[in-house]
Every structure is written in structure tokens, then in C-alpha cells.
Length: 534
Image (cartoon, rainbow, N blue to C red; front, side):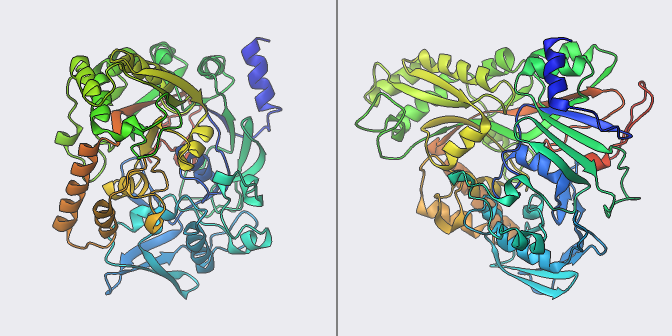
């Protein structure tokens, strides 16, 4: 047995013998099973298999009814009516009702919830009858349904029975019953979980969607395998069936393998650098008396030093689209003019640094993920090289996403690589999390830049209740104009995502990078496309 075989065999354990098992490898694990604790892709990826929201978004960007059978505005433009699906059971056999929706929306709005920024426009949730809910917002909010697609519904009775009425405080590293246990309505139930090693899910016999969806995958074995080489080797040897985080350097080789299928599409995610623009001295820099990043000339120098086109060709091997805005083209409010990438100019960058009082540059630490984004460590090393040309000595510190996210949430970083997807397809989601003053109006949860602008905050809040589309679009453009001018973030590129799998599976790349396995069919023929409409 090879070293790779031994590693994967240890992760897999004894096969369960189901009719159809899919062994699913990713670079990183979900950090918690509490669906309201953290708002990040790996968590949503796993949780969407066991929990369900009222609505999901399919690969075409359309909203699909899930636990809500239908939704519509009432005569009052501030009140949405949701008709709930009847006959839905939680994994413990209890029936899903409006009480669970009221409880879950209240829980997701709690101070320890990382999902609360999505729900700040909600002023009240009312149970009309056991299967009808009214959600009232502070003003007309046409985007409320879009904001619900990652708000999973918990059993109120289960949560109360296990003392998890409040979301886990992930920033404080709290452990609760919901951290490692689930009771959802989703197509799969939790069989076993070994954090950062192996999670096994089985098809839920009582799932409401039987007869509506293929449900041809009986068992999911979720395997976080950090090493890119090991993930690819496991796929080539037949020890895993589906690799979601595919190393760029291996794509051509995998495409040439007749036993495999490779699917590729643009992801609704921008990769960027965040900068601490506050007034206090930096923690991770050799400048101890002030913050050089607080000077816009320094931020502009960083912007000019980074060659995004070289990143695309030399680091990303074409699997990225260089950009100058932290919004992918999927997002309402995106403008080509904002996204246009200019030429790098090291000479002008050096001049700006000298004008700011740093003719010889300075030292700074760049915190980088090493298990989340395509070629993340290589991106950071390239950025370090670009900044080195203008005298900025950049030390790259790589770490797992869970540690990076905690540092960002605790503002324990000055210069960092991060990525942001936009499930609502609207700019307000970006502003609520990344631009608004942290902690004010329950927004700014992921804003580690220390940027704070009272007028911008006012504009951001207004987006949740502005019913006039033209006025709202004008406000979005105004906010983007400020964000672009201030350079609190340095966008790098939008990702192009690639999946690889054995040929009997055909899993398309969803722009959210979240596969919904209940949609997929399985082919018994290696040459079949095994197509499944999602």
C-alpha cells in the first residue's frame, strides 16, 4: 500500500456498503456545525447537506423554494409572506412548523451570530398560522429573500433541549452541543464526525424531497485533505471520487485522464488584500510609532506595486480574472469601470512611499491562508515579491482558514489575504460585512480594516429600506466610489473554479462553490455524461 493509500484508507475507515457512496475531498473542513456561528464557504458547503434554509439559489442564479413553498410581498411593502412546506420532518422525526422559522431567524440575529448582518432590516417575525410566516422589515426590502439563502432552519425544540438557543461564540472558541451535532431537515443526516479528518453523512429516509430530486447518492464521506498533492493522488488512485479544491498545476493532467471528468466555471468570489487603515500603530510591522497604512499614499503605492496581470499568468495560470473591485461581475452594482485594472508602476510606487516618509520602505507581515483559495500561498509570495521591489519587506505568515478568519473577526491582523463570495448577488452584502463600521448597527462583522465613515454607514443602512431602484443604485455607486478611492482593500482577481471527479458523477461548478448533492444523478456507464439539472 502506498503512503497516499494508507493515508486515505485511514481517513475513510471501513466502507459502509451503501448503494452509492461519494467520497468528497476538500482542502479544509467546516470549523463548526452550528449554522449561525460563522459565515464562510466551507461551513456552508457542508451544512447545506444537512440543514436547509427557506430558499436556495441554483447554479443559474435563480431562487428555488426549499422550506418555503412560496413567498411574496403583502399589500404592505414592508411585509413578506412565506408559505411553508408542509409534511417536512427534522432528522429526529419531529415536524417542521412556523415556530422553527421564528426561532431560527431570532437565533441568527443574536449577537454571537455571524449571519446577523444579513437580517438587520428585519424588525419583526410573526407566525400567522402553523405554516405561514410574515417577516416585517424596517422599510421596503426587495432583497430579503436573497438574504435568506444561507440562513439554516433549526428545530426550536431540539435547540432548547440541548441548551443551544444562542449561536456558538466562535470568536471566543466556545464549544456547544450544536458545534458537533445537527438536527436539520436536509437530505443527509450526520452519522459520524471527526473534526479535520472525516465526516460521514447518510441519505435521510424521511426527506421531504423524495420523488422530487434524484437523491441517487446514498452516502457522503467528507474528507478534508490539506495537501494538494495528496488530494490529487487520492483521486487518481480511485480512493476519492470528487475533489472540490483542485490544484491549478494538476488540471491539465486530470483533463487528460479518461477515467475523470473536469468541470470549470467562474466563481462568485473575489480574492483581495485587506489593510489596517486605522490611526493606531500596527501590531505586525517594524514601524512602531504610527501606522504607515493609514496614509493613502502608502496604500496607493501598494496598489501600484502589485502586478495583477502577472498574477493571472504566472501564479494562477489563467484561472483568474484580474480586477480592481471586491465585487465579482455576478453582483448588482458591479461596474466595468471600477473593475478595470491599470498597469503596475514600481517607480511611481517608490515615489509615493518617499513622499509619505518611507523612502527606504518598511517591514510588515502579510497573513495568508494556506488551505482555502486557489494558490493562496503562491499569491502571497508573489505579493511579497512585488512589494519588495519598492522596498517594503513583507513577511508572509501562512495559516489555515479557521485561524485567519478568527484573526480577522478579532481584528488581530494588519495586512491579510481573504476572499469574499456574494450569495445575495447584491453590493449591500459586501458593504454590510466589509465596509460598514464594525459593530455599529449590527454590521461590519468582517471589517478588519478599521475603516469607519459615518456618511458611508448611513448610506449602507439606507440600502435595506430604499424602495426606489434608481435611488438605491445611485447610493450603491456612491459607496463604491468611496471604497475605490480610499483603497481599504486591494482587489486581486475573481476566481475560476475547477472540480474533478470520477466519470460516473457530473457535478457542475455552482458560482457559490456549494454543490447540492440531492440534485445529482449517477451513471453506471463510465462514458455517460451523468447529467443532472440543477
